[in-house]
Length: 377
Image (cartoon, rainbow, N blue to C red; front, side, top):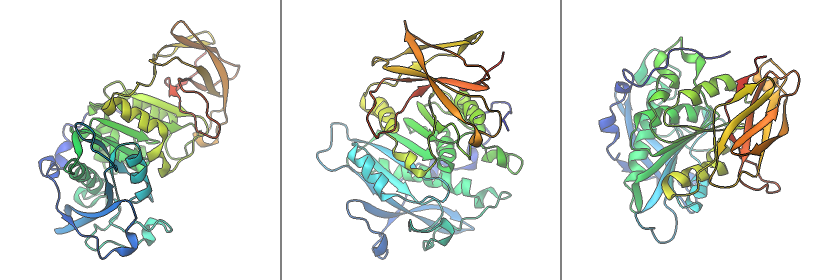
Protein backbone atom coordinates (compact mmCIF):
# COMPACT_ATOMS: atom_id res chain seq x y z
CA UNK A 1 0.00 0.00 0.00
CA UNK A 2 1.46 3.36 -0.95
CA UNK A 3 0.75 6.71 0.62
CA UNK A 4 -0.57 9.64 -1.33
CA UNK A 5 -2.03 12.95 -0.26
CA UNK A 6 -1.17 16.52 -1.04
CA UNK A 7 2.02 17.63 0.65
CA UNK A 8 1.12 19.65 3.69
CA UNK A 9 3.02 21.52 6.36
CA UNK A 10 2.47 21.94 10.07
CA UNK A 11 0.31 25.05 9.65
CA UNK A 12 -3.06 24.31 11.17
CA UNK A 13 -1.66 21.43 13.21
CA UNK A 14 1.13 23.00 15.29
CA UNK A 15 -1.40 24.80 17.48
CA UNK A 16 -2.35 21.45 18.99
CA UNK A 17 0.62 21.94 21.33
CA UNK A 18 1.40 25.09 23.31
CA UNK A 19 5.03 25.40 22.26
CA UNK A 20 5.63 28.51 24.34
CA UNK A 21 4.90 26.48 27.47
CA UNK A 22 6.80 23.42 26.26
CA UNK A 23 9.91 25.55 25.60
CA UNK A 24 10.12 26.34 29.31
CA UNK A 25 12.37 24.16 31.46
CA UNK A 26 10.06 21.65 33.18
CA UNK A 27 9.99 21.08 36.91
CA UNK A 28 12.05 18.10 38.03
CA UNK A 29 11.57 15.75 40.95
CA UNK A 30 13.67 13.26 42.90
CA UNK A 31 13.71 9.60 41.87
CA UNK A 32 15.08 8.52 45.24
CA UNK A 33 12.16 6.19 45.98
CA UNK A 34 12.67 4.36 42.68
CA UNK A 35 15.85 2.63 43.83
CA UNK A 36 15.33 -0.40 41.58
CA UNK A 37 15.61 1.86 38.53
CA UNK A 38 18.81 3.68 39.45
CA UNK A 39 21.67 2.90 37.06
CA UNK A 40 25.32 3.50 37.85
CA UNK A 41 26.92 6.17 35.69
CA UNK A 42 23.70 7.88 34.62
CA UNK A 43 21.16 10.09 36.36
CA UNK A 44 17.50 9.16 36.75
CA UNK A 45 15.07 12.08 36.77
CA UNK A 46 11.36 12.81 36.84
CA UNK A 47 10.12 15.84 34.95
CA UNK A 48 6.70 17.42 34.71
CA UNK A 49 4.69 17.09 31.51
CA UNK A 50 1.30 18.29 30.29
CA UNK A 51 -1.84 17.41 32.31
CA UNK A 52 -3.95 14.35 31.62
CA UNK A 53 -7.68 14.63 32.39
CA UNK A 54 -6.90 17.79 34.36
CA UNK A 55 -4.25 16.16 36.55
CA UNK A 56 -0.49 16.83 36.46
CA UNK A 57 1.78 14.17 34.94
CA UNK A 58 5.42 13.16 35.35
CA UNK A 59 7.87 11.41 33.04
CA UNK A 60 10.71 9.06 34.04
CA UNK A 61 13.97 9.63 32.16
CA UNK A 62 17.66 8.85 32.20
CA UNK A 63 19.78 11.92 31.54
CA UNK A 64 23.50 12.58 31.66
CA UNK A 65 26.39 14.66 30.32
CA UNK A 66 29.76 13.18 29.29
CA UNK A 67 32.57 12.80 31.78
CA UNK A 68 35.61 15.03 31.58
CA UNK A 69 36.26 18.71 30.87
CA UNK A 70 33.50 20.61 29.12
CA UNK A 71 34.57 21.46 25.54
CA UNK A 72 34.59 25.08 24.35
CA UNK A 73 30.99 26.13 23.87
CA UNK A 74 29.62 23.14 25.77
CA UNK A 75 28.53 19.60 24.97
CA UNK A 76 26.14 18.91 22.10
CA UNK A 77 23.05 16.95 23.15
CA UNK A 78 20.48 14.45 21.84
CA UNK A 79 16.93 13.55 22.80
CA UNK A 80 16.43 9.79 22.32
CA UNK A 81 12.90 8.64 21.46
CA UNK A 82 11.95 4.98 21.83
CA UNK A 83 9.66 2.98 19.60
CA UNK A 84 6.63 0.82 20.31
CA UNK A 85 7.12 -1.25 23.48
CA UNK A 86 10.27 0.75 24.24
CA UNK A 87 11.14 2.76 27.32
CA UNK A 88 13.92 4.90 28.78
CA UNK A 89 17.32 3.36 28.04
CA UNK A 90 20.23 4.12 30.35
CA UNK A 91 22.67 2.24 28.08
CA UNK A 92 21.78 4.42 25.10
CA UNK A 93 22.42 7.54 27.16
CA UNK A 94 25.80 6.12 28.13
CA UNK A 95 26.65 5.35 24.51
CA UNK A 96 25.94 8.90 23.36
CA UNK A 97 27.87 10.19 26.38
CA UNK A 98 30.87 8.13 25.21
CA UNK A 99 30.52 9.84 21.81
CA UNK A 100 30.73 13.26 23.45
CA UNK A 101 27.02 14.11 23.69
CA UNK A 102 24.74 14.86 26.59
CA UNK A 103 21.66 12.66 26.22
CA UNK A 104 18.18 12.09 27.62
CA UNK A 105 15.99 9.01 27.13
CA UNK A 106 12.47 8.95 28.57
CA UNK A 107 9.56 6.52 28.88
CA UNK A 108 6.64 7.79 26.78
CA UNK A 109 4.11 5.34 28.24
CA UNK A 110 3.95 6.82 31.73
CA UNK A 111 5.81 3.78 33.09
CA UNK A 112 9.05 2.86 34.81
CA UNK A 113 11.75 1.26 32.61
CA UNK A 114 11.51 -2.44 33.46
CA UNK A 115 13.16 -3.87 30.34
CA UNK A 116 12.30 -7.53 30.96
CA UNK A 117 8.56 -7.15 30.29
CA UNK A 118 6.25 -5.60 27.70
CA UNK A 119 5.09 -2.02 28.22
CA UNK A 120 1.62 -3.02 29.45
CA UNK A 121 3.22 -5.11 32.22
CA UNK A 122 5.68 -2.49 33.40
CA UNK A 123 5.08 -0.72 36.71
CA UNK A 124 3.16 2.49 36.21
CA UNK A 125 4.85 5.68 37.31
CA UNK A 126 3.03 7.56 40.05
CA UNK A 127 1.44 10.50 38.24
CA UNK A 128 2.53 9.11 34.90
CA UNK A 129 -0.02 9.67 32.17
CA UNK A 130 -2.32 6.72 31.40
CA UNK A 131 -1.37 5.31 28.00
CA UNK A 132 -4.38 4.55 25.84
CA UNK A 133 -5.55 4.54 22.24
CA UNK A 134 -8.05 7.38 22.26
CA UNK A 135 -8.16 8.72 18.70
CA UNK A 136 -11.13 11.00 19.23
CA UNK A 137 -9.75 13.26 21.97
CA UNK A 138 -6.40 14.72 20.98
CA UNK A 139 -5.47 15.78 24.52
CA UNK A 140 -5.73 12.17 25.71
CA UNK A 141 -3.85 10.53 22.83
CA UNK A 142 -0.35 9.09 22.83
CA UNK A 143 0.72 11.40 20.02
CA UNK A 144 -0.24 14.52 21.95
CA UNK A 145 1.55 13.43 25.13
CA UNK A 146 4.59 11.97 23.37
CA UNK A 147 5.35 15.12 21.39
CA UNK A 148 4.90 17.22 24.52
CA UNK A 149 7.26 14.95 26.47
CA UNK A 150 9.88 15.10 23.71
CA UNK A 151 9.85 18.90 23.50
CA UNK A 152 9.96 19.18 27.31
CA UNK A 153 12.89 16.72 27.42
CA UNK A 154 14.62 18.96 24.90
CA UNK A 155 13.97 22.00 27.11
CA UNK A 156 15.36 20.11 30.09
CA UNK A 157 18.59 18.89 28.50
CA UNK A 158 19.29 22.31 26.97
CA UNK A 159 19.25 23.71 30.51
CA UNK A 160 21.86 21.35 31.96
CA UNK A 161 25.22 22.84 33.00
CA UNK A 162 27.86 22.28 30.35
CA UNK A 163 25.37 21.72 27.49
CA UNK A 164 25.42 23.90 24.38
CA UNK A 165 21.71 24.62 23.79
CA UNK A 166 22.40 25.52 20.15
CA UNK A 167 23.80 22.08 19.27
CA UNK A 168 20.99 19.63 19.92
CA UNK A 169 19.23 16.92 17.94
CA UNK A 170 16.54 14.26 18.16
CA UNK A 171 16.86 10.55 17.31
CA UNK A 172 13.78 8.32 17.09
CA UNK A 173 13.16 4.69 16.14
CA UNK A 174 9.96 3.17 14.72
CA UNK A 175 7.04 4.84 16.53
CA UNK A 176 9.72 7.05 18.05
CA UNK A 177 10.70 8.04 14.52
CA UNK A 178 7.09 9.06 13.89
CA UNK A 179 7.18 11.19 17.02
CA UNK A 180 10.69 12.52 16.35
CA UNK A 181 9.77 13.65 12.83
CA UNK A 182 6.81 15.63 14.16
CA UNK A 183 8.92 17.12 16.95
CA UNK A 184 11.60 18.09 14.41
CA UNK A 185 8.98 19.96 12.40
CA UNK A 186 7.55 21.77 15.44
CA UNK A 187 10.55 22.46 17.70
CA UNK A 188 12.77 24.91 15.82
CA UNK A 189 15.51 24.64 18.46
CA UNK A 190 16.68 21.25 17.17
CA UNK A 191 19.64 21.39 14.79
CA UNK A 192 19.39 17.85 13.37
CA UNK A 193 17.09 14.84 13.35
CA UNK A 194 17.56 11.11 12.77
CA UNK A 195 14.46 9.11 11.84
CA UNK A 196 15.06 5.36 11.94
CA UNK A 197 12.64 2.93 10.20
CA UNK A 198 9.68 5.31 10.21
CA UNK A 199 7.66 6.88 7.42
CA UNK A 200 4.35 8.60 6.86
CA UNK A 201 1.98 6.53 8.92
CA UNK A 202 -0.96 5.44 6.82
CA UNK A 203 -3.08 3.42 9.26
CA UNK A 204 -4.30 6.33 11.38
CA UNK A 205 -5.22 8.76 8.61
CA UNK A 206 -8.90 7.82 8.59
CA UNK A 207 -9.09 8.00 12.39
CA UNK A 208 -7.40 11.34 12.96
CA UNK A 209 -5.57 13.22 10.23
CA UNK A 210 -3.26 15.13 12.53
CA UNK A 211 -1.62 11.88 13.72
CA UNK A 212 0.17 11.41 10.43
CA UNK A 213 3.71 12.83 10.24
CA UNK A 214 3.04 13.42 6.56
CA UNK A 215 1.20 16.53 7.74
CA UNK A 216 4.38 17.85 9.33
CA UNK A 217 7.56 16.63 7.65
CA UNK A 218 7.48 19.13 4.79
CA UNK A 219 8.03 21.76 7.49
CA UNK A 220 11.28 20.19 8.74
CA UNK A 221 14.01 22.79 8.22
CA UNK A 222 16.97 20.98 9.77
CA UNK A 223 19.33 18.34 8.34
CA UNK A 224 17.56 14.98 8.65
CA UNK A 225 18.86 11.44 8.25
CA UNK A 226 16.40 8.67 7.31
CA UNK A 227 17.50 5.06 7.97
CA UNK A 228 15.59 1.89 7.11
CA UNK A 229 15.91 -1.79 6.17
CA UNK A 230 14.50 -3.06 2.88
CA UNK A 231 12.27 -5.73 4.45
CA UNK A 232 10.95 -3.80 7.45
CA UNK A 233 7.63 -5.34 8.51
CA UNK A 234 6.19 -2.09 9.88
CA UNK A 235 6.91 0.61 7.30
CA UNK A 236 6.81 0.20 3.53
CA UNK A 237 9.66 1.24 1.27
CA UNK A 238 7.38 3.35 -0.93
CA UNK A 239 5.99 5.33 2.01
CA UNK A 240 9.49 5.72 3.42
CA UNK A 241 10.75 7.14 0.15
CA UNK A 242 7.75 9.44 0.00
CA UNK A 243 8.73 10.69 3.46
CA UNK A 244 12.32 11.32 2.38
CA UNK A 245 11.13 13.18 -0.70
CA UNK A 246 8.67 15.27 1.32
CA UNK A 247 11.11 16.15 4.09
CA UNK A 248 12.61 19.61 3.78
CA UNK A 249 16.26 20.69 3.71
CA UNK A 250 18.02 18.04 1.59
CA UNK A 251 17.52 14.90 3.67
CA UNK A 252 20.05 12.05 3.61
CA UNK A 253 18.82 8.46 3.32
CA UNK A 254 20.36 5.10 4.14
CA UNK A 255 18.41 2.06 2.92
CA UNK A 256 20.13 -1.11 4.10
CA UNK A 257 19.54 -4.62 2.77
CA UNK A 258 18.92 -7.01 5.65
CA UNK A 259 18.73 -4.40 8.42
CA UNK A 260 16.58 -5.47 11.37
CA UNK A 261 14.08 -3.45 13.39
CA UNK A 262 14.72 -2.57 17.05
CA UNK A 263 15.30 0.32 19.41
CA UNK A 264 19.03 -0.28 18.91
CA UNK A 265 18.55 2.01 15.93
CA UNK A 266 19.01 4.89 18.39
CA UNK A 267 22.72 4.09 18.55
CA UNK A 268 23.55 3.16 14.96
CA UNK A 269 27.03 4.36 14.00
CA UNK A 270 25.70 6.35 11.04
CA UNK A 271 23.61 8.45 13.46
CA UNK A 272 26.75 9.56 15.25
CA UNK A 273 28.53 10.46 12.04
CA UNK A 274 25.55 12.46 10.80
CA UNK A 275 25.27 14.29 14.14
CA UNK A 276 29.01 14.94 14.26
CA UNK A 277 28.87 16.60 10.85
CA UNK A 278 26.08 18.96 11.91
CA UNK A 279 27.21 19.98 15.40
CA UNK A 280 30.90 19.02 15.56
CA UNK A 281 32.16 19.95 12.09
CA UNK A 282 32.68 16.28 11.28
CA UNK A 283 32.99 15.01 7.71
CA UNK A 284 29.82 15.02 5.67
CA UNK A 285 28.24 11.85 4.33
CA UNK A 286 28.27 11.42 0.53
CA UNK A 287 25.43 12.82 -1.57
CA UNK A 288 23.72 10.96 -4.39
CA UNK A 289 21.77 12.77 -7.09
CA UNK A 290 18.55 11.77 -8.79
CA UNK A 291 18.42 8.35 -10.45
CA UNK A 292 18.60 8.29 -14.25
CA UNK A 293 17.57 5.21 -16.24
CA UNK A 294 18.56 4.69 -19.87
CA UNK A 295 17.20 1.36 -21.03
CA UNK A 296 18.49 -0.94 -18.29
CA UNK A 297 21.46 1.20 -17.28
CA UNK A 298 20.87 3.24 -14.11
CA UNK A 299 23.11 6.00 -12.81
CA UNK A 300 23.28 8.93 -10.44
CA UNK A 301 25.78 11.65 -9.63
CA UNK A 302 27.75 11.28 -6.42
CA UNK A 303 29.76 13.82 -4.45
CA UNK A 304 31.83 12.96 -1.41
CA UNK A 305 34.38 14.58 0.87
CA UNK A 306 36.02 11.22 1.38
CA UNK A 307 36.84 8.95 -1.57
CA UNK A 308 33.95 6.63 -2.44
CA UNK A 309 35.42 3.19 -1.79
CA UNK A 310 32.72 1.11 -3.43
CA UNK A 311 29.12 1.13 -4.61
CA UNK A 312 26.37 -1.39 -5.13
CA UNK A 313 23.11 -1.90 -6.97
CA UNK A 314 20.41 -3.24 -4.64
CA UNK A 315 17.40 -4.82 -6.32
CA UNK A 316 14.49 -7.21 -6.00
CA UNK A 317 12.51 -9.12 -8.61
CA UNK A 318 9.55 -9.54 -6.24
CA UNK A 319 6.37 -7.50 -6.12
CA UNK A 320 4.65 -8.78 -2.98
CA UNK A 321 4.78 -7.33 0.56
CA UNK A 322 8.10 -5.68 1.38
CA UNK A 323 8.76 -7.99 4.32
CA UNK A 324 8.68 -11.03 2.02
CA UNK A 325 10.79 -9.68 -0.80
CA UNK A 326 14.22 -11.11 -1.51
CA UNK A 327 16.84 -8.43 -2.11
CA UNK A 328 20.13 -8.92 -3.91
CA UNK A 329 23.22 -6.79 -4.42
CA UNK A 330 25.66 -6.37 -7.30
CA UNK A 331 28.79 -4.21 -7.55
CA UNK A 332 28.22 -0.81 -9.18
CA UNK A 333 30.77 1.33 -11.03
CA UNK A 334 31.99 4.61 -9.55
CA UNK A 335 33.69 6.83 -12.11
CA UNK A 336 33.96 10.55 -12.85
CA UNK A 337 31.54 11.60 -10.13
CA UNK A 338 28.88 9.09 -11.12
CA UNK A 339 27.72 5.68 -9.88
CA UNK A 340 26.15 3.33 -12.43
CA UNK A 341 25.03 -0.27 -12.90
CA UNK A 342 23.21 -2.56 -15.34
CA UNK A 343 19.83 -3.82 -14.15
CA UNK A 344 19.36 -7.62 -14.28
CA UNK A 345 16.30 -9.06 -15.97
CA UNK A 346 13.09 -9.09 -13.96
CA UNK A 347 13.90 -6.21 -11.61
CA UNK A 348 10.85 -4.63 -9.94
CA UNK A 349 12.48 -2.18 -7.49
CA UNK A 350 16.03 -0.95 -7.10
CA UNK A 351 18.34 1.70 -5.64
CA UNK A 352 22.05 2.52 -5.49
CA UNK A 353 24.30 2.60 -2.42
CA UNK A 354 27.71 4.19 -1.97
CA UNK A 355 30.24 3.69 0.82
CA UNK A 356 33.09 5.94 1.90
CA UNK A 357 34.22 3.86 4.90
CA UNK A 358 36.23 0.62 4.78
CA UNK A 359 34.63 -2.72 5.62
CA UNK A 360 35.25 -3.74 9.24
CA UNK A 361 34.74 -7.41 10.02
CA UNK A 362 31.69 -7.97 12.22
CA UNK A 363 30.48 -4.38 11.89
CA UNK A 364 27.32 -3.20 10.13
CA UNK A 365 28.07 -1.25 6.96
CA UNK A 366 26.25 2.05 6.50
CA UNK A 367 25.63 3.28 2.97
CA UNK A 368 24.22 6.49 1.64
CA UNK A 369 21.40 5.57 -0.71
CA UNK A 370 19.81 6.92 -3.83
CA UNK A 371 16.05 7.06 -4.07
CA UNK A 372 14.18 3.75 -4.00
CA UNK A 373 12.36 3.43 -7.34
CA UNK A 374 10.27 0.95 -9.33
CA UNK A 375 11.69 -0.22 -12.65
CA UNK A 376 9.64 0.95 -15.59
CA UNK A 377 10.56 -0.70 -18.86
